[in-house]
Image (cartoon, rainbow, N blue to C red; front, side, top):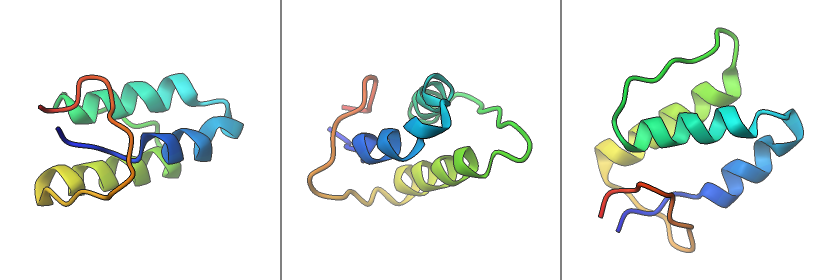
Length: 72
């Protein structure tokens, strides 16, 4: 399985009240769907680029949590 640091991403953005948006974004990135980012949403852009980089480089970090729909 491929693992992403879902817990940290979620904790980082929970105070922004954007959890549903961020979770959909993460889900879309993992499933390789086109991703729409809100203009000026630097947090979402950062997450998108981090996940995209992980998917492309196949670099994984230990002690990460599996995301629903992550590649097997």
